[in-house]
Image (cartoon, rainbow, N blue to C red; front, side):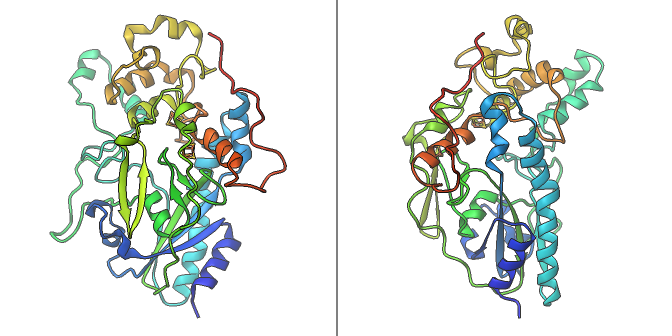
Amino acid sequence: MLDKELIRKVALSSGADDVGFGDLELFDDAPPDMDPRYIFPRAKSIIGMLFRIPRGVQRGIEEGTQFGQYPSLAYGNINEIFAPVVLYEVGKLIEDHGYEAVVYRNTGGRGPVSDMTGEKGSTLTPEEQIEIDAEIDTDKQRSSKKTPLHRNVKSTRPVSPENRAPDLQFHFRIAGVICGLGEIGWSKMFLSPKFGPMVRFAYILTDAPLEPDPMYDGEPLCKRCMACARECPGNCISTDTTKSNKINIGGKLIEWGEIDTWKCFVYYTFPGRKHDPFIPTEVFEENKDGKLAILEKEGVKSGEEETLNVYRTLEGYFPTWMGYNMAKCGGCIGACVNMLEKKGCLKDKFNEPFRTTRKRWEIDR
Ligand code: SF4
Ligand code: SF4
């Protein structure tokens, strides 16, 4: 007989690090374009599987000596290889018992509304835009080309009046809350009581009736210490508690700080002269045509064009790996792991703390 414990057991033995079962009715207040029930209207349950990112994947970033493991092992491997295999195994188990398993891996930024701006538009990320730009010969051609909004699908439309436009994506972190796997911190990162922010997700929607798990109701994991904001090289996370985002999920208040997502898009890949060892100093000094303004000057407004200016200017110094950018900022995740360990939220997991008292590195230039 198929039940939660069998699913949990198979998911864990296949490689998931935590498993939770969510109540689909808790998506009642989600925007329809992000409601997973449009993907599988007969679904009775959502199963969340959480995959931990080994703490040591951050080590090279902490020391400033190795940055490639995070995008390749933590993002690329889990999203593209590891989690899909577990989805496949658990999906087979469910279907062997006569229920359908709609497996949903992390597809990232390809929905009808942008995960950057919430607007409708087209499908490119800045990296892809640069590839297209490379095929455009002249500035005139480039300026005549309307820059797309990226991060979403351009001409998508509902296939019937009662449907939503494809490709529907739901909010993975909110689904994680609904499945009882943890909460969302001030940095908008998902925080697991077991692994802090070092996690990724995959989901299954199924018509198997499975009792939902309670949402996480332990001691709040996020201590509002604002270390994530302090250690962000681009000051992308606001500390202004009057401007936070708040949502209510089944009586549970979820709150996170205002994030400048375009600025983060710049800084996590190209974190400026103090934190980017791959860019020669003279490139910052020259700041050709002012294209690095967002990195070099205080208070420059962020947006798509400013982001593209930086990517176009610096992309050649360190190309994208495996379709995922190198996260060189080393900011909010490392800061949060460090704080959660110090505050005892992730206690007793490691023999040695994530960080010693040594100050975080900064290039002197
Ligand atoms: S660093 Fe502090 S404020 Fe930021 S998400 Fe983590 S616990 Fe919350
Ligand atoms: S990922 Fe990096 S750039 Fe983005 S908010 Fe976190 S620390 Fe800042």
